[in-house]
Image (cartoon, rainbow, N blue to C red; front, side):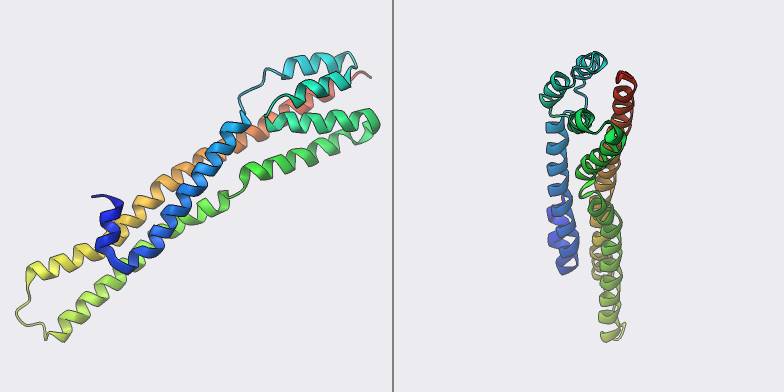
Length: 203
């Protein structure tokens, strides 16, 4: 059964789950595109940059780093720029720029975490309300001549919202874990490369 069928059968209770699914998909596509364009695994520029730093040619090293879309290269650029004017501020500037780049990669991750937690709760709420509505209807009919088919139909329709909530939450949680892993990889990458640059600066 598709999510569209679940939404149609579940009625109004599916609306917040539908909104969650659309938001999660939009955030995933946006972040996937951001990470793809950032090319976090592209580190071909690192060794030539370090070699130039070792020789004291900071300007040319900066130009090589500027050619890479990797956010670590942006941090390297800022580090090399400040190195030419305020060597005493190099480490502080590297941390500041790295923090800004990390914030860009981490943007919208809290929303994904919220959706992963909220979608099952919306589903559970829909199920509870559906069950309440079902039993109120049975009570109004005097509980006489209960139609088992109608009862079972009401129960499974009520449970649909829980199923839909889990259908949204599980992949959203997986996406959040993957994106968190990529941001952590970037965090380690920045720390490693900046430390290597600091070690290569001629005394």
